[in-house]
Image 1 (spheres, rainbow, N blue to C red):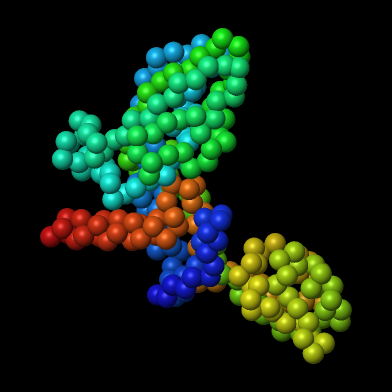
Image 2: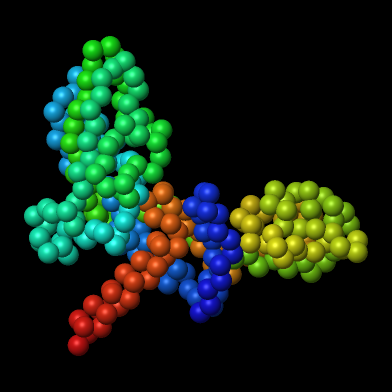
Length: 264
């Protein structure tokens, strides 16, 4: 099996790579491991001191839990793997506070943290709108967790699709119509012939617009590969995509080692 990086957008925290000579089962297993086993920080407990807003404590707690927090995996442990055995200490949890009065819209940037390395990824996530005289004050506890426990610990959006196999067996009478029909720019004309743009073929999402245009006379075949896959990872911001992949492979190796022990 071969793995090749296609592109990496640092601003959008999005990475794409090509898995060749693999299988859908392996690729989906990697996707599930990233979603379920790569740990991130998220707010787990909230203790309210004051809340005279229009929202119940439970609603605000839910919103707080879904705010992505930057994660330092070197400084924190999973509670079950910490030396305190989940009782709670500085190595497995972090306190965050908020104290504010209306009238204003409370944003994620209003949350204060004791660790500058762990803070809301985005400043303008709205939490609640306070009117004149309304107050919100709480102390929240953030911990490391995995997506298999709750979606708030999921590190990002991860999916894959088969790599397209496109074959032009017969030149169409009007090749420009085929070029114009493809929204992804997969086709181009060279020396008056319709060809596949090798740099754009990875963008094909099997919309089959080209097949509809060439339906009457055929000549174009588009089918998914059974062994090659385009893998897309878009981080929510807690971790960089490269760190997500590194921890995913570590988790994969750990699971294989556990399985090997069970077989013995």
